[in-house]
Image (cartoon, rainbow, N blue to C red; front, side, top):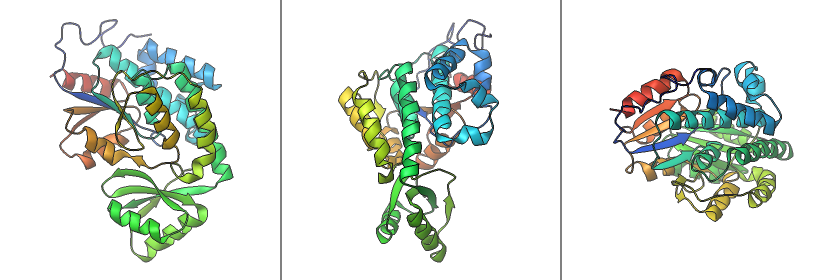
Length: 325
């Protein structure tokens, strides 16, 4: 097993620490692809350890599912959330090994918020894997109890979206991702009505390939079950602020962490508010995890923000080199 970019030496040996103010973000479900994380897995023992830990807790081989599984299997909620969490946490640990800097903040989109809190030391990795696994199962069951769907509406302001929602029944704002990109969720009947309204009013939209209406009141059955698990979980104070999905504000204390996570599953993801809140406090943001979904959203919100990502050896090397400048 290779040990990183320079054998057992980290990139910091003999190098000057970056003077850049750094924040980190973690993507959520929807960023998965077959083969994600394989490059890091083959080069870092810590990644193998993380995958093995998660596999024991969650009951399936994470490495096999990420590297060899079909995209259909990998996209199943109960599998996808665990695998994406594992990749993102692995990317964080590799980043810390090669460039051990304390970020000024962390944030995550939906599932990614669990990575942010784990990186900040609020959860142990073992507890986080267990909680993510339960979250996925509870959400899957909630989609059976309350069937629904999601649509990304394009080119409309939040005020315009709110007006559309007020016209329709059983439709809710799920994700405020970026200017002109807002996701709505609702019952099947609500989504059908929304699609029809968009067609009739020449509004662009994309139907999302998801199993339910996440981050809406339709997830209440999952919220009730997950809330009980969160109440019984050991949570520590964060080592650095985590900006919560539910309001885009910093969270550090255990009680506020519990409250944020309980509300998150049935509330809109306030991604625009989150990035607007942190944009003046950092010089660059590093996305840790598969694809560059959040990088694209951040550039739409704050076009002049320096944004980098780490998902494989190539992006790791590039990001470290830039941060050292």
